[in-house]
Image (tube, rainbow, N blue to C red; front, top):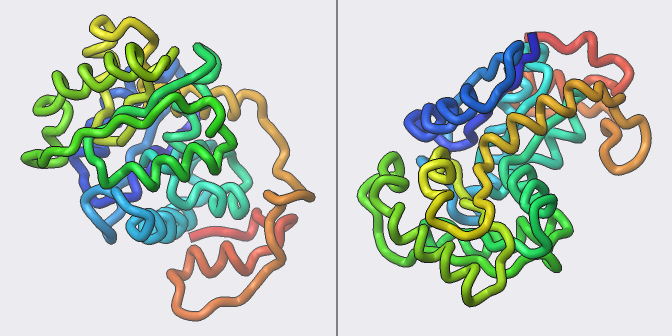
Length: 257
């Protein structure tokens, strides 16, 4: 059994469950997807500051559940805490955004990111750049109106999001559409027939890429930018994270809860 931890670094359990519906459908037989919603932070992450908070909380949760999974997904578009998690953990860690963007690059030359709030724009643009894909970005198209609740965004805004996707194709030259944001999980499958180019479901892409990396069984880097840092003591951190920081790279077997 392959165990994949789908870690939602915001506090909306309804968003986690929405992603879990997609994840369970996407997983192949023999894969168990385990959902986890953090208990501290914000209902949904939309800014750089909130991403920093979510990334720190995500590292705490990953350390707390170390040993329970074969791969983990940071299940928020923008991938808060992804690089730090890859540095610390011995198992593959997949970012929701990175999975969606890289999948888009395998289906077309230029992609557009479409989402539900203008507040997301600066952070999403920086995320695309951080993943080295700015030259492949056709546009970022975002809705500018309010929404009733984060749990109802796909149902409430589906028609407007489809129109944004159509404009990205018609006016920006997008070959692929990436529906961005954990709250939009499941929408790609419902609307893909309305958009004339492929529409990426990021949750499904992340699950399948997690399965691929587990199957490849890559060794943990012992050199380079993602080798585990030297052990370091800390003050005031949750004990599982403190133990992870204090553990040498070749002695991960001693990390436990």
